[in-house]
Amino acid sequence: MKVFIASDHGGFNLKKELIEYLIKKGHNVRDLGPFAYNKEDDYPDFAIPLAESAVKEKAKGIVICRNGQGICIAVNKVKGARGVTGFSMKEAKTTRLDDDANILSLPAEYLEKGMAKKIVDVWLNTKFSGKIRHKRRLNKVRLYEQ
Image (cartoon, rainbow, N blue to C red):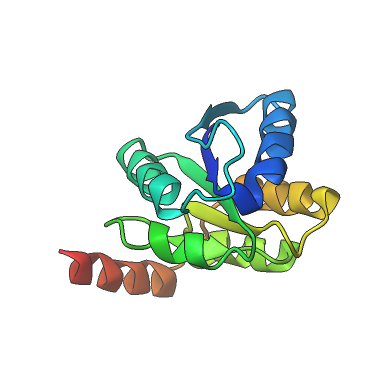
């Protein structure tokens, strides 16, 4: 599966760990930065290009910052992006089943690396349920975006 990944300085180390993990799992991973640690970088500089790429290529995206929230807000400014935060495996699963989320935001400060990997696995391996009520709700969001 094609997976775009990006972070800011707060998620830089977890991003490196997840890239290696995802490649070992056979995913086609595209790192959109940052490529070096810079404590002064800003998450919108990485989140917005990731969201644009994920939407355009109908791929999945993973973004990481310290608390997972700011970077999630940024990805959701892109039309077609459905970014969600993932603090648990159950939450990650329901965001795919019910909301067809295409971008997962992780809080590096609040997740152990092992749990982050489990959350990513569940999220990437869960398909959208396609239930009528969920399709109807997502369609309302799409209509608003236009």
